[in-house]
Image 1: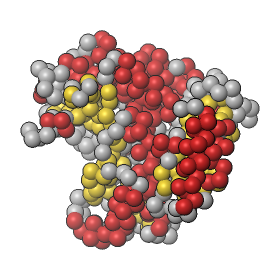
Image 2 (image 1 turned 90 degrees about the vertical axis):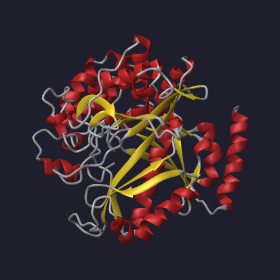
Image 3 (image 1 turned 30 degrees about the horizontal axis):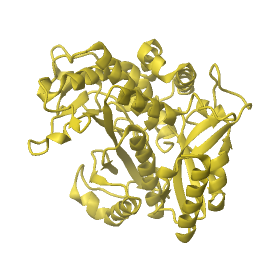
Image 4 (image 1 turned 45 degrees about the horizontal axis):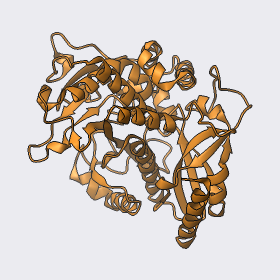
Length: 448
């Protein structure tokens, strides 16, 4: 689309927003610490923003979860500027924030070149890399959160219902109905909404989409949950753990691999009907999981969640419908073979979703290129096995060492993005060095 066509479209969108009573547009990106950052503009300025962008310092790529900053080889300090360009195809009226719209942004330098640390463009590059091999990824994140009373200084849950219990939906029926109403108004297709295991915990799953769109949806869903919670006098905590020793919030990533209109996760001669391409892709993901944790479980708090026997996926193994395996394969019901997919269970809600989808695609394509095969699947809880599979890293520092040794991820990310991710992980290790689990949980539970 030409610049003139973009401006025409922007003016059309302005008319739509004004008619809907929208006064401002929130333009978001997600930094390497997993926090959604924003620049907001008045609706009337949208056409100018589409043409010229909005300024923002590149230093946010080395911000930490507590808003302190570190530096990497190319990023840090007060110098430099970027331009944020909203993606109008994702422009959404925010049902739970009357007067506001939202759009994700791509980031460019002042000369118009793609910013090498733009996580959203990284996800797009990896999706394009798959398309060049004739492959398409359909992905979706599960969003888990713990809801607490917003007016309480201590953790106070507004529901006493049991895990997965109908009582929680009864107790919070207006809140949850409001969430479903808001998501529907925003054209988000919800697959299911249910109470989870931990106190006050819920999960919402949405329909799969392409990699970039799936990451966009993850941001939109989370901010919708946050907004609806606030309107009901509640607060949503997305951190990997809310209370140490209690099951935490996952950010599980589901994926299926397609070629034209065929789901490669079924109809083949491989394990449980996988095609050889699907098996190689999943084998590549499994091989890189220790390094991928630095992307998908990026906080010191992540390792308070990632423990055995809590369905968190703490072991480097895969299995059919095994919720203890880090990589879970779902063959789907006989009447819906197209539903076959895989789930990366070891990821959590601190992850930047654009980094997560891009890194998983890179790992999977490396498996396809190498013709990898999966090891034997694991059934049951690996922690109780006489010869358990390898344990995934149990600290961010250990995951970071694998990340730094991964040629696959370094090549895919490119040095500027790879270096900035590593710098943030290194700095957060230092930030929480020696901190008690309670302090780590308290510092992170409501940051994401």
